[in-house]
Length: 255
Ligand SMILES: [Zn+2]
Image: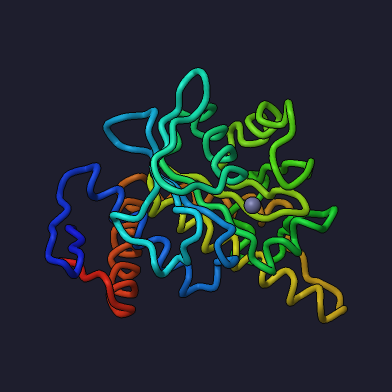
């Protein structure tokens, strides 16, 4: 599928596609209520240059972001080389993850009401809904150390994201990773839904029905066991639907 800006520019190369997909992700995330003024950020790694990634430009609302407004960060041994406006506190989170996880091609980070609420609970994400069971036993947690990374925290964050694609940043928000922005966004969508359901269920004050550990593990493995080919088809269908959603808001159409 090729995504086309309304300007008529066709983005068919891998670098262009990644940047356009990242723009689409911002627009649909806004539709899903995943924004926090100008203070959350999504990013995607350049497919041809592993030391380069594109990220939410600081100061923009998600619906204002397009292919050309994304900021660029080049990772170097002595720090980051930045092109475009940047939320420095946010960028270091993305840089730390990309540096530690060469398999990660994209990252979503949010401060949603439900996500932050769950991040404040000692129990973390509870295995109570189908939304959360897909992540059962595969959620990382990172303790809060302040609004920006403090000395040594980069290494601790890298330890927190090792071997998982979903991380709850305690007292802060949510972080998902994927090979592509569509995968990272899909995980964020379902993690957000899991958090919303958990908060709604807890708010009733009624006793919860909690599936057994065995059922929780079976459900997680079912989601994980759909197979690569089936997953690719799901992701393609899901992404095509999200592109149509972005197009319905203006700014993009897909072909
Ligand atoms: Zn944050």
